[in-house]
Length: 386
Ligand SMILES: Nc1ncnc2c1ncn2[C@@H]1O[C@H](COP(=O)(O)OP(=O)(O)OP(=O)(O)O)[C@@H](O)[C@H]1O
Image 1 (cartoon, rainbow, N blue to C red):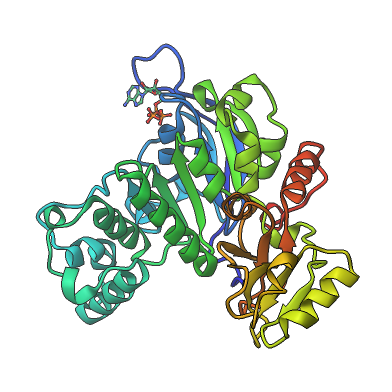
Image 2: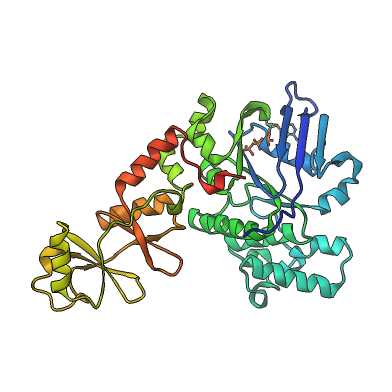
């Protein structure tokens, strides 16, 4: 499925930062390992030291003590400029150069690396496609001629320009509206499926952390690590009151976004009938089995209609009887989607496979049982395993 990681491991060993003139360190004695090819989120309250911690990785800020390695190499062994060219960096409000066009902004690092014009132009085009901006339309625009979301896309493209193994992202989607933000998050996840970079991502939005993170580091004062684990583990078992406060209300609902329908036991015990079946025949089967409802499938086994036994005696065909299936979910959908479909349908939600074919139904009890099991730590979701 996913390619091998192109990212490399990052290690922080007893890293401390004291800013000149401050009595207390901004970051005190932080040690953590950021695995290759994963998205690690640093989340914590304002001023806790997230940005300082991140910027020490590309030496925009020099640590006062401790050691940082990238792919096993001490960052101090590199020239700082050279290091930064090899680490993608994306920040809030994109940080684009206002007097450069989109193409020039994306091409900054390749230009510094002395790539040929032709190679830069091709790379810019490739990256614009990757982040969903039409090169013909946007290449020659200036940042002020772009929406906030488009600027952020350019920012991400610029960070990826020289194909660095490591990306640092400091609240990169912080300045856009919630809907655009959701799209940008989805796009980042889609990109990462094939890129497999090592991504360190700073946010103070816990929901964003849960959505994007393979691992989340919840940081307290001076970047002290309160908990460093998968989103699943943090939601199910916050290590202390501070983490619990960050997880906030609605932890059970957040957990539902981490699980897919395929991870839970949906049932396929619903009585089904193909659309060509005669209403009399279906009526007979339902009454013989003492059931009230059947699901009508088309000739490719795609769910079409729910039929109640009492609708059948007056019906001439299954094409119009009963009511159409509304919201259905696929095995890939999240349990949150399933819950929404159950609520919208007012009963069971139909589950379909990759070709839209009927594979089963999921009901409210399955969802509530799953929440119970998550509480006691008995469910593994795929994204939680690494
Ligand atoms: N250049 C600086 N000189 C002195 N103190 C600084 C400097 N930069 C940051 N600090 C202090 O270091 C601490 C950590 O700041 P940092 O920006 O790393 O936190 P943060 O968690 O990223 O915050 P936010 O979420 O608000 O961006 C803060 O107390 C801040 O005031």
